[in-house]
Picture: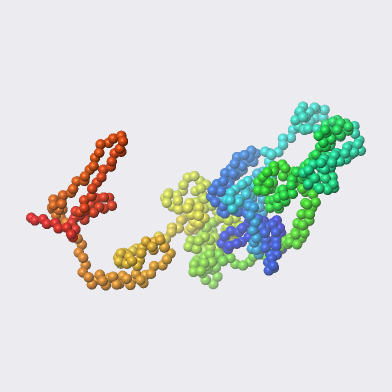
Length: 594
């Protein structure tokens, strides 16, 4: 029962599709709806298959840089299978929240920030274990390093020197190591020090009464006295005592110089009410991610100022009130929920009971004819030929299948258990496919996430797409020419999804065919002999164009040649006489006698 009990903060699998891998989410809240159902507000994690190839290259580059920076941690040589499965364990954190039905939970998993001191094999040895090191923004499509990284390792640790032997002097320069600000062996008693601190608070209260901005923020005497009693006033008073060698008269004179009493204010007083409201809103959204708080809400504040204000804000009544409100809200919300084990059959199961064929991918009309497991196609991942249950995988036309073990691996980790041929080519620089067309087709299938079909042997074979040839009959070509008014090919090409009225085209073609069959066909014009062309050119000699030439001068630009066009000929597109003028037309008579 503990395995089916899910609490806030658990990492769980969610199923949103029967054929796709599980979603990995972290439960933030459990809310009960008005209908009585339980919804979970979750933080989204993304797999490598969910982001673009460009971001995957950036993630690989980041991992390579971390590996190069590590000095002592030496990763063991991983096999191709381990490298392939390690990619399935990598996730990308996001700041995106969504609400999902709690009934879609399919189990628990573990997600941790990548620890550089541990070996990556530790993630492969544990089931349902994932890691992340980068933050993915789905809206901006960017990857950033997680700012909440705990820096563990020799690069971030202090070098501890050897312990001094008793009697050995420390040769280090103490002024560079630390600064002394207080001496407990002072000549003053504790009562005298407390009296001086009371005087310092009184001076601070009086200074706030004289300051116009402070009187607006602390309009009452009680608020001014409370502000003057903060740590910043006490630190200033004790530092003044130390700098004046614990001389009370000299220290009091420094508290009230000639210009007026000294006013010491910390971040709580420096911030306005509107800035405090912005900080509380940002803290509710981002938590203690001070970089994002400064970037999106308070860019005019320094990071040191924001952090200092946060720890001072935790000591105020405002923080106590918000903490009580959140505790009351948490009491009203669900702490845990019991989800029974999901036992309904998956639609992708290939059923072989009673000899009935099972549907492939749940598609209507697409069936898979069960065969003997020994003679049928092997598992697309591990190439096994026997399994107590088979699942259809990939597009329906591929008719690929996975065994029960590889199907569970696919649902949990979002990939095949064994690397495919295309991935082996990526890992090994030498190509294994002789035909470049087949190699490009395999890589294209791998990029699109399409399965590569196996036939029972470890050597994968690519299933070629079914080719077709569209043959146009002579009657169709003739109808395009005869029925131009009805068909209107240009308009039909601009609207490819509008159906063509075949009945109207058939009727017009029948009418035009009857007209053409009743009228005598015109004989094609035969090509005139060469002698006829020569005789025509002798009767109608070509006129030479009048060329207007002018003497170029410095004042007038040179004129272009003006060509005159003969009236008895018509120009073509290129400005030359057509072929029909030379071969003869109906209105031209060319007589040649022997």
